[in-house]
Amino acid sequence: MSTKTLTRKTPAKPATTADWDPALLERPRIASNVEIHAPTETGAPWVLQRGHHQHFRLQPDLARLVRAMDGSLDHTGLAEVLGPPWTSHHVATAVHKLADSKVLDDGKPIERRSTWFRFVPPMTLQFTVLRPERLLSRLAPLVNLLAGRTAAAVAAVFVLGGILALALLAPEMDAALGRPLPFSAYFGVLIGVLATTAVHEIGHGAVLTYYGGRPSRMGVMLFYMSPAFFCDVSDGWRLSRKEQRVKVALAGIATQSVIAGAAALTALLLGPSDLRDAVLVFAVATYTSGIVNLLPFVKLDGYIALMSHLDVPHLRDRAMTEARRFLARILFGGRGYTRELPGRRWAVAFGLACMAFPLYVIAGALTLWSDLLQRLGAVGTSTVLMAVCYLVYRLGLGFTRLAGEGRTAGAPAWRIAAAAVLLTGAAGAALVFVKLPYTVAAGYVAQDRGRVELVLPSTAHLSAVRTDATVRLYRAGLMTREQTGTATVAALTRTDTTAPLSAFLPVASTPLELPVVSYPLTVGEAPADRAGAAQLDLGRLPLGEWLYTKYAAPLWGW
Image (cartoon, rainbow, N blue to C red; front, side, top):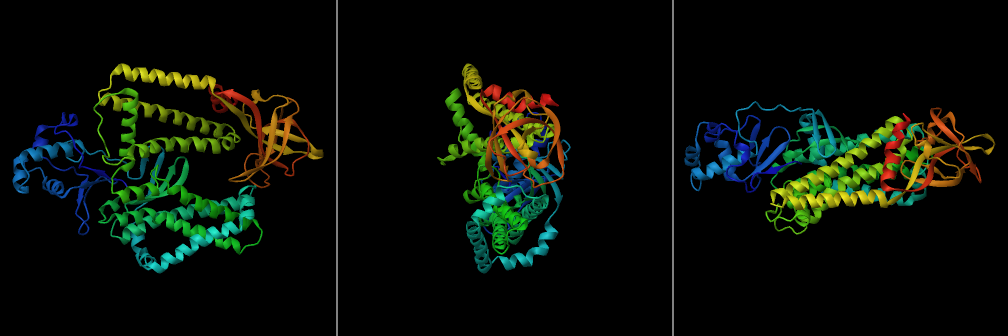
């Protein structure tokens, strides 16, 4: 859910209205893309909608003023229409506040933004596919049936029963997650995950519709480089009770948890097979997705539920502003800092977590996927490098915003500059003196007569390979891997050849081959698998050299 509030203190004449036509401020009119929604029932808020995505909660008196703004009345006339306690001064203050929030007609053409595409910072791309009102209205009878306590009890049985089933199948689950599976199994898991994600989003919209709201759009998105679906339930801010908004937020997680439980229980009925392995992988992935969705530090369902429970619009953005001001006060000094969430002692800690968590997600994704992507050659290597560059960009943007808070609060320029120099120096020292273990993602292939070869894509940092370097051999699955042996590089004799796809991806035997460079290995005992993942250990490098060698140097092999 997305919302803003117009109840925060704003100067009577902000600088943003300086270039307005005075006549438009004197006889204000709401913009053509703005709509006022009356309360749906007693206790519900007034909501101002701007465009398709933004919703503002209004106090009743301010809502009355906005509804009266048709361009025919000046400030005195509006005050007379509204009556006490409104005065022309109060109206003027509110007009400038509304103008600053881009709610009023400024005489300029309305910028028509795309209705099918939207970028949501820091790393989400949304593509609208459909307007869901008709679909959800057809589902209303089913939702009414599932809204009772009996259905909730049955759902709990599936969720808890599925967890128990996974515990009973723990050895089989570990094997399924840690070994290559055939393409057909992965395809089935992918289709299941996509279908479950779609049902998850329909769950949000269905519960919102049940309570009288209107989901505005549904579609697909890239969320931190991961494909997913979405359902815009911003209209939930019109609901009268926060408990209803919490249920809307958690409906998707509840839905997918039931599906995960059903899959895990189904696995109990299946014998050893690729089908059972695929069902187990799907169940674990779906449960895990639900748990991740509960995290409140990014704009996922858990955050929306927390924001709804606290009834604080834009909780995350405001908490991060508090955290930036806290850090700016420590680093830069200054006295003009204001509180975004007064009375909430946890706001700074929550804001710091919200600032750090997206960086952690990006760094974690790099750690998890970089080796796998770099095994795929130029495309994978360039993708990883772009993610690293984006991470550095986010860090730079964060410091820029931090400095901006300091300047706004009156911090001296010399102190901001000094802090920038010190932080730059600390980063430089870390690049030189902090050392990390350097490894290269690779694969291995066992040939006839026990001969084993290390295989790398041609874009790998081949110049780092050295004789007697340690190589760890793995059987890798989709989520875990098991070390099956060790070896050393026997010689630097390079051979251009091909290797099966299973040497780079956790895919069971397939005829697909990739062009590679191979090196002979010395092993004590040939691994049981014909091909698998490998990791080349090349000692420890300073952080700066490590970053260049791991993420930039492979590009020069194009």
